[in-house]
Image 1 (cartoon, rainbow, N blue to C red):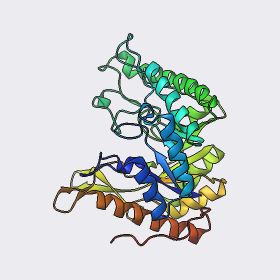
Image 2: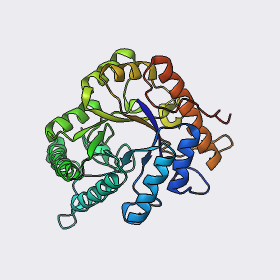
Image 3: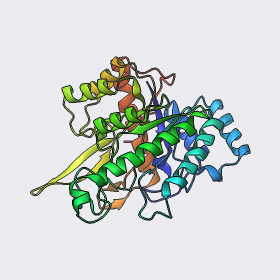
Image 4: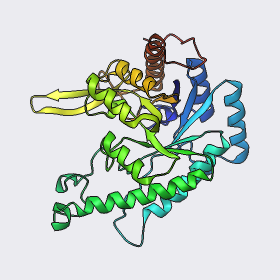
Length: 331
């Protein structure tokens, strides 16, 4: 297994400060000791339409000179039904998929992460009106019989299947992340991939999204995915608790959250996973004093997360990258 730095961490969404160029993020990855980078193909930085052929070649050359691979193109796709029959967002989503696959091909990248659905949050505003999935409209017979859920599932399944066929033209494997909604857990994700039934549609399996972290559950989940696993992410999740129960969560570096990394990594080795684990910071960082984080804090977390994970992977004998030296993290 190798380690990559996800560019979403440096896109300016979750901290206050400058947005480094893609080239600067690649240099950071090399300096810190990562083996690759994951691109986030959305504005303000890596949107495919904003990167012309000359710059794509220059990015390939820079990465090669620094011994960095483009590990994954991490598209935030959404194949859900639209609210209006004349404005089907999936048509536009498939065009986006094609442009991301072109970008991946030009950057010698073989893997593209996708979501079944993406609404910006784990649950929709009106999710309480449905059952297994967000309701498409207010409570009715259609919702209570879960016909809306089945219609969404079938529509998304056909969209992913079409996306997989597009990706195959560019030599790209799609990695469906075990991320809600619709694919609400690992079992949903496996079933979606199995029903799509394409050799190049597989799974991005993220431990932080597991509903449980005990040894037995983690190992069984990884074994169930097996050789369908082609990508993963590393971050830490820490729940905020109150007298009323769980009231939110915050992202922390790996090793500071709830994740059972040793069992997960051992199970990944057991199924023969040899892909990348991308370090990502994908929610707001609020520091002590209730201040939004600076770019320096993003850098510190990237280095600390890499240090923890690389040391653990070396201890377990599962790290296969060539970057053996890790910069000392800023404490």
